[in-house]
Image (cartoon, rainbow, N blue to C red; front, side, top):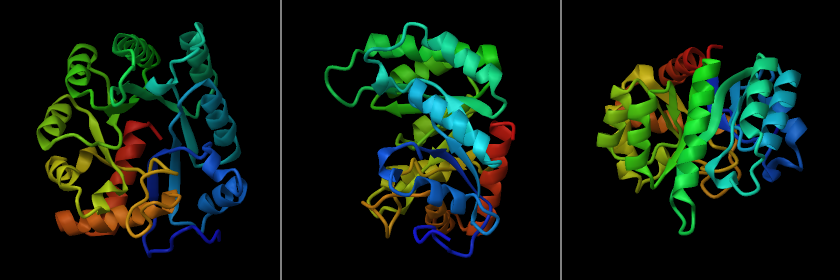
Length: 265
């Protein structure tokens, strides 16, 4: 078993948002994924969060190599530069031709840095929401410093899906939950100063909760600042147990069931 795979006594992990195409995995990707998706691993399923057309091709190729690896297709808001004018049709074809494409994503809004074209982001996001509706797929959403615009778009389009790496308030979480959406939490739940995320976690019912890594980013304590991998969701589940009183293995089982329901797996 790869040395980085955490053995914490938990099993059945579904990582609902990962990026194993990231260059952080270039040195040992095949070995890590092979061990991660073996019968002896604590990880049961992976969902690749696509960020552009090349990422979609990677996700589809890798999903073809591993039984329990699935993928999305989509364009991240940070990847708008030099956008292929035929992107929507290309994503549609990829989704229709590959049964292991289970979502449109990672799509959304990111207003964190000055200079981002907000109107163009909204146009890209809404076009991909339309594509998801056409394909009957859920949406994996990235939302950063764009809460009001995101909520307005949700009210209009009413997609099914998940807001990943949730960083908003408990009040925002409640609005999203009222719209039928799922909420995804990362290793941030393990951070001592993550009061906002912990308050939001407290309002999410068990049947709308997802765990994710966003790996190689967002590693939980005690691995913060290091390369993350999907087995580290065990630490997220342990932190969630402390917050909720629900046993960690039960939370792993619940989030596994929720992700399989959302992504139709």
